[in-house]
Amino acid sequence: MNTRPRRNRKNAAIRDMVQETQLGVEHLIFPVFLKDGQGVKESIDSLPNIYRYSIDVLLKEIEVCLNLGIRVFDIFPAVEESLKDKTATYSYNDDSFYLRAIRQIKERFPEATLMSDVAMDPYSSDGHDGLVEKGEIINDKTLPILAKMSVAQAQAGIDIIGPSDMMDGRVGVIREALDLAGYSNTSIMSYTAKYASAFYGPFRDALKSAPKSGDKKTYQMNPANKSEALTEAHLDVEEGADMIMVKPALCYLDVIHLLKENFAVPVTAYNVSGEYAMVHAAAQKGWLDYNAVMSEMLLSIRRAGADGILTYFAKDFAELIKE
Ligand code: PBG
Image (cartoon, rainbow, N blue to C red; front, side):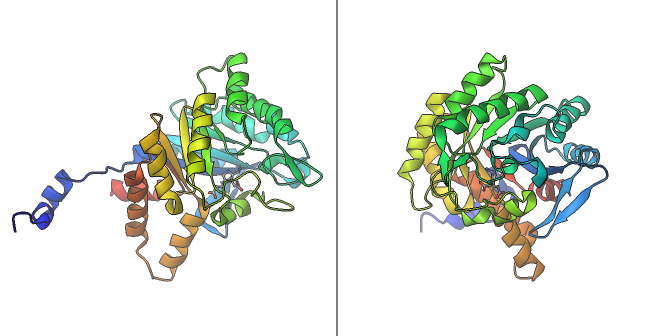
């Protein structure tokens, strides 16, 4: 045998030297949940070790994460049902607990990079990402709402706007609105290939944001489709997306790979709530080794081609590699 691949695996020094994919805390974005109030740290049954924090507690949590090397946070608001309405007006209310919290975080930790979701669902009495009329999601009437929400978030200090709504044309409309308002430095990380997935359940529990009727299949992508991700990516890049995202991550590694091969912009992946929850469930039963599985999953997402990964594992991973 001339070639014995095992020679390159014979000890840790050689294995590390020839390792093709690197994974570090600099690749991770930590999604966190914010709630109105004081002194709140509320657990979420389907998302072990992830909490809804009030701003005072969240500031402490962010400090801990910054010390672990986590620098990018995606902050999601859990909005009281009484503040929700048909047109998601609370999403651009300058005095909302969410926008106030963003300002506080940026003031206290200017070094923290903040990302925000743009979609109507956490603020909508219908629980949909777009405006609902007679049971239909109305694309073009949703766009100005998304634009207002984006400008309000940029004004509060958000560094990266994350349109997660899957309406057609939204990236262009948001880019134009941001530029007109003077926020040409605010980035857009578009949820480009966002699938109508069953893995979002725990997230919807966290925000109580599940659709009140119907499902999201008229706007989120069919899990059976791959070429369609190219169509979405072409549009988003043309409309001004700085980074494009695939979501969920693990069942869609082929899509991550496809976008990485075909586009020059950075590709990110959202390792979603259900993907995190199922590892916890198996680890609790003693069926899987939590740290090993977490590391292997995150590495596989990087190997598929993701530059950045949004993941609820961020803090656990950061603690693991610090040990
Ligand atoms: C809202 C949004 C969702 C997620 C991120 N932004 C849920 C949905 O589309 O229903 C899911 C994230 C996760 O499951 O971790 N548009």
